[in-house]
Image (cartoon, rainbow, N blue to C red; front, side, top):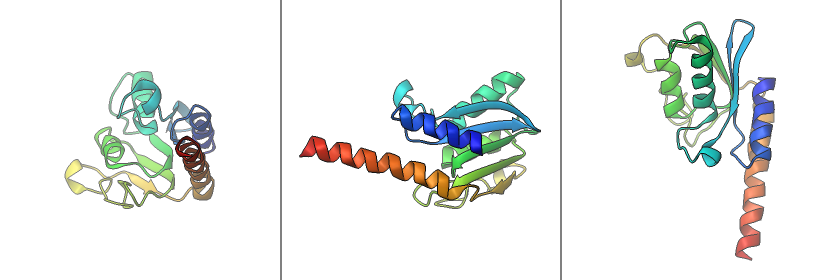
Length: 150
């Protein structure tokens, strides 16, 4: 999760919403990513999606059934569904997202039985640190907006 937090810090420095993600296979790190929506003008370039794509390319397969996703914020429904479709073994996440979280924060896609085997899920890892990076980003955004409006 520390690597995911470092990736979130990188996103913060680049003006992206600071969410970081890591995919591991056993003790091996397959990918580290962060949000790239602004840079790539891509609504699907969430940290999780970028990390899953990189891991799949690294392994040369789309099934990631022996892999884990570590992400600083509860995945949205799109990303939670991608975890399920990739048949991942498990998911760890930091801060909960009651607004659009797909693991029970807003909706519970991750545990939907129609999508096949349910991965192991654990939330709340380093949640305060993950939340503080997001809070800093949005505070900076509000300050910038106030300067423009003022």
